[in-house]
Amino acid sequence: MAKKRQEEEVKTGGWITTFSDLMNLLLCFFVLLFSMSTVDAQKFQEVVASLQNSFSILPAGGTSIGEGQMVGSGISQLKELDVYFNQVVQNNSDGENEEDIKSQYEKEAEAESEKIAEEIAKALEDVGMADKVNVEFNQHYVLLTLNGAILFDSGKADILNGAKPIIKKIAQIIKKYDKNVIEIEGHTDNVPLSGRSRFENNDVLSFYRALSVANYIKGIAKVDPKLLKYAGRGENVPIASNSTADGRAKNRRVEIKIYNSLYSTN
Image (cartoon, rainbow, N blue to C red):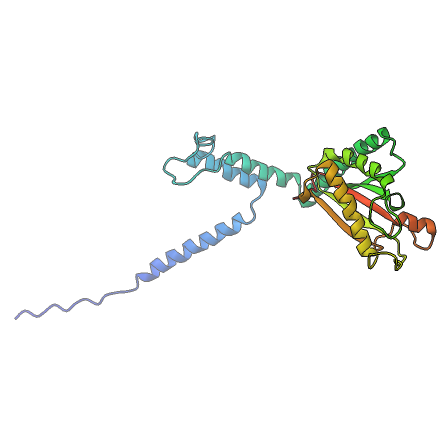
């Protein structure tokens, strides 16, 4: 009687080969990642060239740049991809960094402020007001300074009738810059207000003086209200010593800041 053939023992050692292959692939993968982490400009260019020749997404290997969609890709192409890559590499090779860009930005801003300051100084001279308004500038804005004594009576915020023509001419001059942010600040000396003033302190007085000038300019120059700012700084930002009468007179002032276009924000 024939005997039933015994089943052969199943050998399971084959998994070792598969596992070894997997480990080798992982090792190669991480070596590749490490090598890519130290890519320099030359290697980057080689990668771009390889993409051009192999996948036809750039001019050297195809005609897809500028034609909208990559056929069959299902996604929009990045227009002028090779130009973008080359610009990135070029910027890195030139050593351009954030500080260089910031420095160039500041130079351009200051140059614009200087141009505006020269235009305003010339306009003030033409209307015979060069001696009544001090003009300065920095990289942020042009600063016009008016002596408070010619604008207001002591302790008051109503513009004197004799000062209105001065502010009117200034408003007509800065009307040209109605797209720029304009900030008006009131300043006082450190002498406390007497009981005759309706304002509780110098901070409040300086604010209402700035507001008076702002409203007058807004009515003449038709400045966009969202670009017009005003503030009262009181005695907190002196430009001269408050220990002398001359110094206190300089500190009682109204400042008009006309920001250049690079620093003007809505």
